[in-house]
Image (cartoon, rainbow, N blue to C red):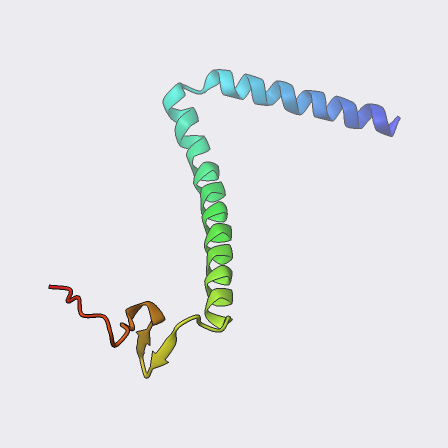
Length: 89
């Protein structure tokens, strides 16, 4: 008997939802559903931001592939050999 009551309650809830949706105008329905949509978007953005922040932190923890002179990066590609006569200008 409990299963029958649960099934009846589910069917009643579905019927009431369909009936309520039919009574609302498209504008009101859109406004009513806008809140939950924004909430879901916010959760997705926060999850994405957390993931990106964790990736950035992990990259920062790895040993850099360039040498540092204090606060300045000195990549090896900037070093010119002594026999290089070509100027950049």
